[in-house]
Length: 106
Ligand code: FAD
Image (cartoon, rainbow, N blue to C red; front, top):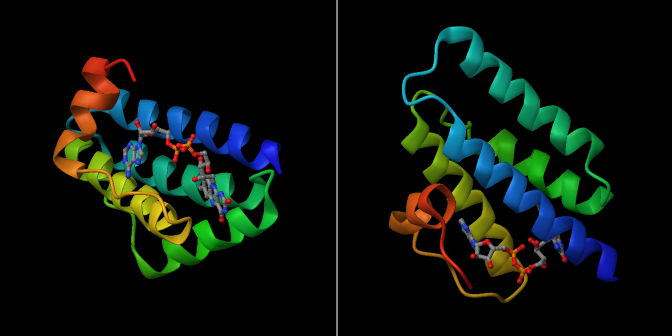
């Protein structure tokens, strides 16, 4: 259904943008808050099977929240997992910051 795609693209934009503005050296509370946010994001994600898969991924792959780049790459890997599931090409995670911090036109 189109909603799953529209919500998906908007959600990835939000999540990768959060990575791009996450501190380079987050304090303890920021790290804990981000982990909590990801879990709750999965809980309330408007496509239930998407949210379930995301929470399963979270359970198997502890979010890396100790630096901005570590989180950006973790999130890129999580997105790639969904890309593969949907038969979409994998994104080169070395480019995550270029795409989401500096920005580029598609
Ligand atoms: P999107 O995948 O939405 O990507 C948007 C843009 O992000 C791309 O154009 C590209 O520039 C960039 N990008 C692509 N890959 C990466 C990456 N790895 N890292 C950084 N940037 C990248 N859909 C389903 O049908 N089934 C599901 O189970 C499902 N689970 C989802 C779980 C979550 C948590 C989210 C947020 C979305 C999920 N979706 C799911 C939606 C799906 O991932 C896509 O968002 C949707 O299919 C629209 O795809 P798109 O081609 O517009 O690009």
